[in-house]
Length: 429
Ligand code: BJ8
Image (cartoon, rainbow, N blue to C red; front, side):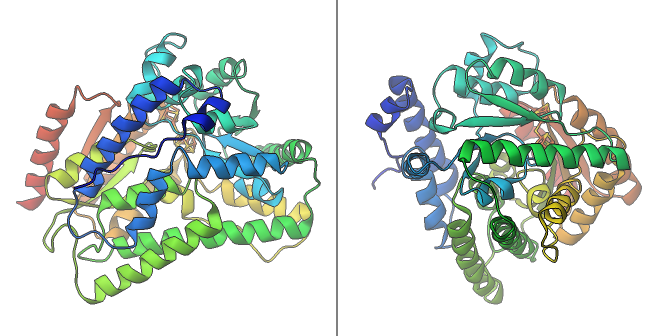
C-alpha cells in the first residue's frame, strides 16, 4: 500500500527563505500523522478526496497559488483571528490566510524568545515564523493581528520585527461607543489593504466579496446541519479538518467542493450510512480553536468509539454562524454591516459575554449531542475562567459535562484518554 505524503517543493521553499531541511522532516511527520489519524478511518465519504489533496498540497499547490497572486500584485495577508474581515481582502483581489498555530513542533522555537507560560497556539504560530518553518508565514505580505487576548496583543510587538504586523483594536465590551471604535478600525483595515494592493475597493468589489463569503459560510452551516443528523454521516475528525482547511483554501473552490461533499452526505443520510456507527455516543466540543494540525481531542474521542458532532469554536461555528447583511449597497453601509456581523462573534475576550453561554446550550440542543467537552488551551485565561459559567449552565440544564485544559504535547494523552473514556461511559449509562 502506498503511503500518504505531503508533497515536497524544496526549490519553492528555498525561494521563501525557509529552513528547508528542518521543514522537510516536519512534512514527513505530518504526513504520517495524517495517514494514521485520517486515512485509517473506515467508511469515509468519497468527496473527502478533495480535502485529502488539500493536505497533500498544503505546502505546495496552495503556496504556489499565493505566490502567483503576489506576482500579479495581489496582496496576501495572514491573520490569527476570526475578527479580521476577510471580505475586505477578497474585495481588493487579495488572499487572506489564517496562519497555522496547532503544532508542538514549532513551540520550542517560540520558547527561545517568548515566555513559556503562555498559550500554545500563540507560541506555535510565533515559532513557525521564528524558525522559518511555515511557507504561509514566509509568503504573506503582512500580518494583521488584533487586541483580543494579552498573549496575542503583546506578541504582535515582537512578531513585527520579523514580519510587518499591524493590529486591529477589538474592544473588550460591546457598548455603542465600542462599536463606533470598531467600525473605525474596519475602515483603517480597508485603507491598509488598499494601500498594499495599490487599488481602491469599489462598492461592487465589496458587495461581490460579501456574497462569496456568505455563500462559503452557508456551505459550512450546511455541513454542520448534516453532522447534526442522528446518526451522523461523517466523522467529527473530518468535520474539523474541513473547518481547518476553510482558513487557507480559495473560497469559491472550497465552497463548491464542500457542497459536493454535502450532496454526498445527504445521500448517506437517506441511506442511513453512519460514521462511526449508528449507536455512537454524540459529543459536542466547545471552547478555544483547534488550529491545524491540532486533532488531539477528536482523535481521543473518536478513538474511543464516540462521534463529535459540533465545534462551538472559532474553527467551528463562531466562524460561520453569522452572515453579513447583503441588502445594503453604499460603502459606509457595507462597512457598518461588516462591523455588525463581526461583533456577533462571542469570543471569551469580551465582557460581559452572556451570548456565548446561551449559544453553547443552543448548539448542544441543535446538534443532538449527549454531552459537552469544554476545551481550553493551557494558559488561556479568558476561556479558562469562562469555563465556570459554562459549567454552571450545563449543571442547570442537566447536560453531561467535562472540562479539559491541554496543550499540544503528548504528555497528557494517557490521562486524557482515561478521563474521556470515563466521561463517555457516564453518558452511556
Ligand atoms: S475570536 S477565540 S480566534 S481571539 S486560545 S490565542 S484567546 S490565549 S484564539 Fe481566538 Fe479570535 Fe477569540 Fe476566536 Fe489567546 Fe486564548 Fe490562546 Fe486564543
